[in-house]
Image (cartoon, rainbow over all chains, first blue to last red; front, side):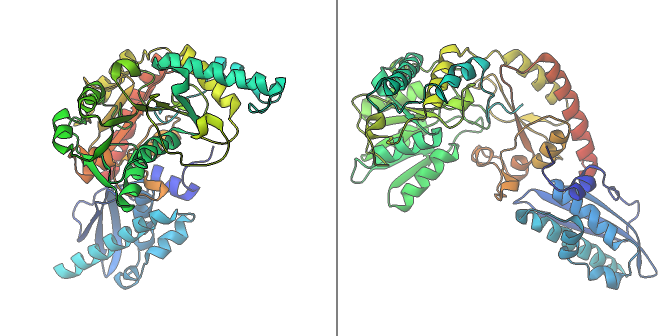
Length: 124
Length: 370
């Protein structure tokens, strides 16, 4: 029997590459959607306007964890300008075969990244 | 370990059903010998079902599911009244809850009783809500998520005094409790074949003889006109066999063993009363994990559990049962149900305990829970 979600989602869910907490993050984005039970936190370290390090901690379902991991992957090494332009659709593209009710997980990840960048910029 | 969702068909049940697919296939309504043969099989099964409930055979109506039986009971009673009031509970199965909600839209008054934090409906709260025009009370015998046993005998006694009809959805009770409808004083009771090692696609409505229901569907004379349509003979035969060989669940010892192990995980709490609970049910709150994530990760390791919320089926709302018990979204989203059955082994319990513990640790790391 196949898994409940696509291979890509399951891989990111079972073996997230970017999970964890940064020691001294330059920016933090905290978001939550209590209706579906998701809480997401993304931390970034920025050098010369480029996201050098990015990590997430997520309390949520498999697609929420996979989306968090994927947005970290997409934002890593990008300039803040480029990272700001990452849309939830980009995560959906990368994960593939996301059930429609789970699209909001990717939107939550987009929001968390934007908030982390905003938090960094506010501190400058 | 999701036996409350469904159970496998017992081999003996399967054997009893097999002749009725191709060999004895007559239409039970036919007068020739082929028809009379399957008619007899249906009536034998009706007798067995009646014996199980201490009812008489003519009080048993076979339906296509427990959902259909619940609809038949509730709508069938309500249709006999001009301005009826219904009392039910907030923790009913959707088959009852949504039927009542649909009736509300049709202008019928419904009161939804709130359980206490232990997941039990109190007799006092029921008493307070009874009105002049209360026609029907429908309260489940055992809750499907937290396994709590409702005081249906006491409810039936109270309602008898007041001449109010009592229906109970007993789908989760057949394996564990005595369902003697005479002794309990119940007017209408619903069961489902696939919850006690019988086939899917078959339900039962017990209807006290003197009670009349308005039919919901129209057609032939089958099931006294309440459920017209050619009978599902193999399923009816299987259901009768399943009830005939049904033994009271022996899951308590294994359940308690697993529960003890789960409660050893930091900050894990049991949802619902332990005392007034069927012996095969565990429903625990595990802070720092989301129920569906745990379900999917356990599924990958071959362990089937359940969450109250059907998140992936498009409904993002948390368990209505846990919320009615007074718990917030967070607790409702971080809870899982584990239900044991007659084929659950000691070894499976040991393994399940280990797997759940490790998986919770992993997910708590992902969520940064400390």
